[in-house]
Length: 156
Image (cartoon, rainbow, N blue to C red; front, side):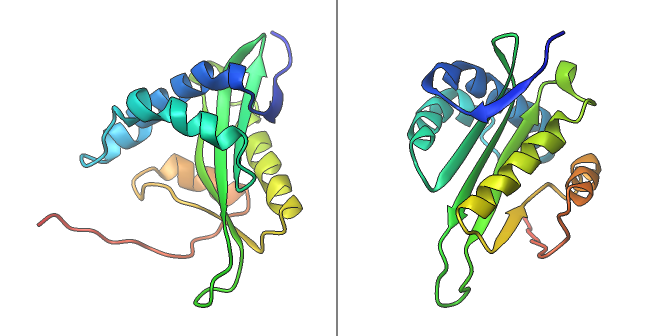
C-alpha cells in the first residue's frame, strides 16, 4: 500500500468526494438523524463540491491513495459580525473510508484544516458531531476541540 497524499481537491476528485459524502451520510447521519435527507449527497453534493473548490471561503481536501479518494474534509469560514466579532472556521464534514482508518489519516486531515484556518486568519475553529457519536466526539477532543455549545431539539 502506498502513502496517502492530502491535498486541496481538484475537479477530477469530485466523483470520489461524492462517494465519501454518500458514505458519511449513510454511516453517520443516516443512523442517527431521522430528519436527514440521506439522498442529499447523491442529488446535490457534486455541485456543492465543484462550487467549493474555487471558493476562498471554503476548503475541500482530498486524501488520495493510489489515485483513489479515500478520505475528505470540507470546511468553511464565517466572517466576524457585530454579535460575534470573530472569524470562525468550521469543519463541516470529515470522512475516511473504513479501509483507510486507524492510521492517523483523520488527524492529518484535521491538522491540514487547522493550518488552513490559520492562513485565513480565523480566530477560532469549530466542528459539530451528533451527541450519540461518542467515537467522533472522542476523536475531535483528541484533536483539540472542546465542548462549546449544546443544541437541544424535540419533535412536535
